[in-house]
Length: 131
Image 1 (cartoon, helix red, strand yellow):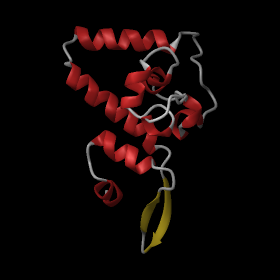
Image 2 (cartoon, rainbow, N blue to C red; image 1 turned 30 degrees about the vertical axis):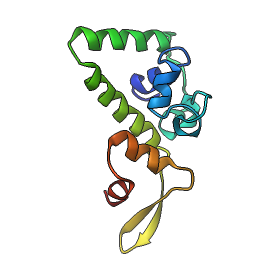
Image 3 (cartoon, rainbow, N blue to C red; image 1 turned 180 degrees about the vertical axis):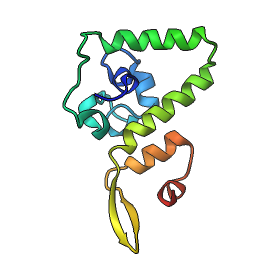
């Protein structure tokens, strides 16, 4: 299991469906209604451990995270930026790469993942592919 925040964002009753759409955490990269789960991302599914060993509910700790962010004074815009980056990292874990020769590689995107990552990071797809 990876960092808790990834699982908290994907918990079924933590973040609202509207927020999940905004962060592209629903089917069809935010256009669909089905919520994505930890099993949909390489980063959160690789270990095969999806629940916390201490039995704590990720939906509950998501709420505590939001309260803590408010308490320390993060603005709504700052929180939005943080959740955009966390969501972009989840999606980036699904990017596929192919050898381009001469120690180069290229992004192989057949499903729109790079578009989602670039939108969440506020950069163009070309910039993302060149990074």
